[in-house]
Image 1: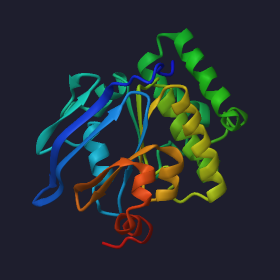
Image 2 (image 1 turned 90 degrees about the vertical axis):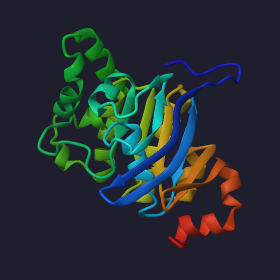
Image 3 (image 1 turned 90 degrees about the horizontal axis):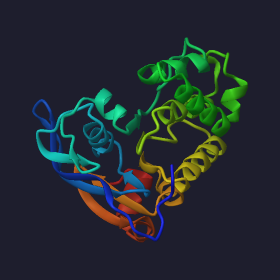
Image 4 (image 1 turned 135 degrees about the vertical axis):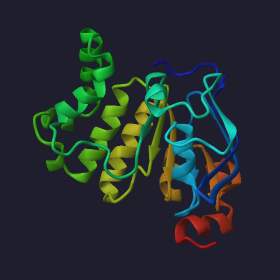
Length: 248
């Protein structure tokens, strides 16, 4: 993966006027965003704002009521998640994203089933994963359920990297983890982004978003209320209070 040069960037992801409802309950209202190739974007908001739902629509786990999702210049609206994963769009779901009764290596082998016949490619990607996550290399024969929460999150990221994605979407990177563990994960994500991987991170923590991402989207009640530099978002007192304290 090669970092972009010359400061030029193109939109890798374009989301236009997405509406979505669970039955009669509308959750997203004309939500739009764009993600440039090689950038890290934070998707912020309080619980119930629609952040995870928008990510699920982008990654093919939900179909919108209306609107379009473009990825790499192609319309992928409503395309199934498994097909999108093969096309370079990977999602790490919040909470449990590993098979706890399988070992670390078995989790990775399961993720690599789609390329299992390309043995040299599988070896190359496994080597990259274990180089990026030396703690997982040490625990490759250990059941994933015996790993700490932070190690399980590392394994979730490692599984996504086996797909060699162009765009990595992470739902709640810091969910339930101690600050020191979150710091380690953030450094890994920053490194991947510096190497050229485009990243979208759903977060409730404005501090984490500010450290990871130069640009942010803020959702409230399914609508985009702010899009711009994360540093500018920090100066929006009403929005900052909403993120930190869940105020409306």
